[in-house]
Image (cartoon, one colour):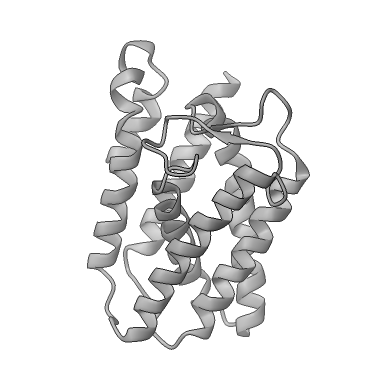
Length: 198
């Protein structure tokens, strides 16, 4: 419900200042609920959680400070407090997206390597809608330039890494909430994107 309310609330000037600070809260709450539906808490799953959170965060730190991964960008304050110029909650976002997309793609009758490629491609497709919305909501900025192709290639390669770990580790990948949360993510960002075009 928070995602659907945010589609409207973040586009209405009288409400945007109330809804924007809720973005980090919504992400953390989404992760908590998603994990409540997880059914296999063996050590390999904890390895996945730790790897995804740490790898995605420090990749973002390197990316912001070197411009070598995603291009020349910087985080605003739409995602909350920052450490080393990167809001830690961005790692939560990587975790949610990789978990949900990985879980959905796991149901495909395909070898693991193909699932990795398909899942990473879905991540990039979603990022096509995320980028203009994130800029408008002050999540991050590209300093007035168009989003570079390097960003999408970076997203794809980082996603390849995360999904390789996801499918390599032996834990159950099914989660009945994952497809619904992923659908809400797509609905939210496509909805915001359409508002921007209007």
